Structures are given as C-alpha cells and as structure tokens.
Image 1: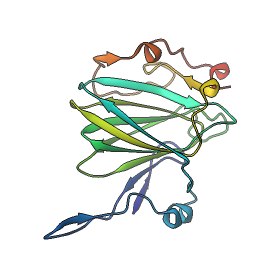
Image 2: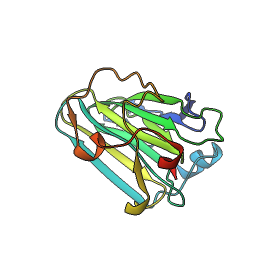
Image 3: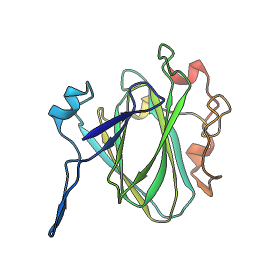
Image 4: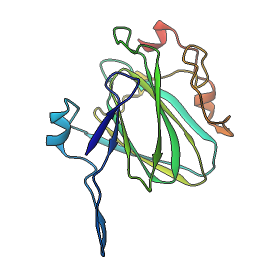
Length: 180
C-alpha cells in the first residue's frame, strides 16, 4: 500500500498495490501490520456504509467529541466522491486546514482521517456508496457537526450541493465550544 500525506496532519490517501492478470485483480484494502508500521490505527470495531442516490449529495461535516473521537478509513465502493477532512485539533500544526481527495471506486483508493477531524463528502455522480471503518463505536451524545460551507475553513467544494439532509443543513458555524 502507498500512503500519501495530505495538508491535514495525520490524514493520508491510501492507495492499494493492485495485482492484475487474465483472471482480474487482487489487492489489500487493509493490513494491520502495514498500518501499524505507519503509526496508524489498526482496530476498527465498527464499519458503516453510506449510499447516496443523487449527484451533488452532501454529507457532513461530522465528528465525535472526546472521549469517543474516532479515526475513519473511508473508501468509495461505487461511484466517485469529493471527500474532505477538516482539522479541529487546536494543538495541530494544520489546525482549521482541510484536505480533500477524490475517492473513486474504480481506483480503490481510501482516505485515512485521524481523530479530531471533521469529515464530509460531496457525491460527484449518481449512485455512490462509501464504506467506513471506524476506530470507535458511534456514540450519539458525542456526535457533532459543523457547517459544510463555514468561512473558517474555506473549503473549495467542486460545485454547490443539490441535496443536503436537515441535520447537516442545521450544523452550526465552527467555534471552540462546538468541538467539546
């Protein structure tokens, strides 16, 4: 696997080494030894799937507060999405910076998002699906969100969203209090 650092400290684009022959292809999506050698999380007690019908669907920006902060390893299993991580860790060298990667099911790439970062995505085509590996179980009382278009982050989304859920549309602007 190839790990490429992003603008957000501790966030990586993960690309598999694909072996192909006349039968098709084979690749690893995760290996605890390989991730541990990079100093990354190796335990994922919860996995989730997000399906999205329409191009322009926006989800996020979501995170869990301490003590339930979670690493996310996100991969598109169908379609393409513009996937974003925003660093909300005040002690981080990339505090309030964002990184984005186009996750593409055909490329089999993934985005490793460390704890303390908000996550969101915008679908680039119809019928997208994402598979999430989570380092901590979902805890509703620790669930948080910040506005996807907050000027504090100035995320350069590729286009305006067409579909936003009520919860995401109601997310507040970023403040230090929101993160706690």
